[in-house]
Each structure stands twice: as structure tokens, then as C-alpha cells.
Image (cartoon, rainbow, N blue to C red):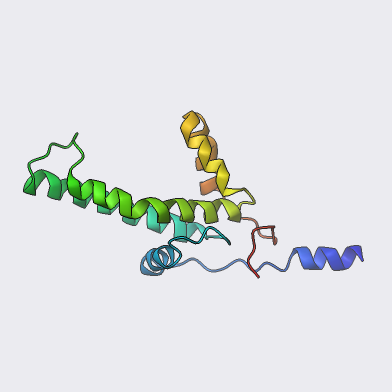
Length: 135
């Protein structure tokens, strides 16, 4: 029976990396989905997409509305509100890939915990099936 459990434990099949467009589309499709796992490519491409969107919103706020780089203009605020939930859900799924709960993101508030969460987001996901796999 121990052999059966060992074979069952390794039934997770790591997925190939997503392209930029696939990753962004997946994160928006799973806007409120906090279950399952996210590959590194899914999370980091969405992070890159968000970063570029924040820069574009800031440039538009400064050029159209006259805000300075230090101020939060209306487009930046709208972008932040629109990307908040999918960013949290993508990070939750990414943490699940490392066998961690999404609640660990609360460590962001401790400042020093940012480094621990960042480590979990960067590291390679579990090759084995874990408790966060969706059947």
C-alpha cells in the first residue's frame, strides 16, 4: 500500500510555461479564482503586464491631467483597483504551487515578511501533487 501512495503522490504533471498573452488571459479569466496552482510564467507575466500598465497610467495622468510622478492620478487609481483582485488571486495560486497557503500574503504587512513571500513566489513549484491541486 505504501507503493500505491507513493505513485499517487507523484501524479501531478507540471505544466509547460505560458506565453505572455496566455498568462494575462488566464489571470483575468481566473479573476476571483483562489483555488488551484499557477505556474511561475503565469504569475510573473501578469506581474510584468501590471507593471507596464501602472507606468502607462502614470504617464497618462502626468500628461493629460497634470499630476506629478509622486501623485496618484485617476487613471493610476482605476488601474490599481482593477488589478488588485487578480493580482492577489494569481499570487495565491502561485503560493499554492509551492505548497503554501495564500494567506501567507498577509506577511506583506510586516515589511520583513515581503522577502519570505517573494522567495516562495520565485522558487520552483512542487513537482509532486499537493493539497492545492484541483482535480
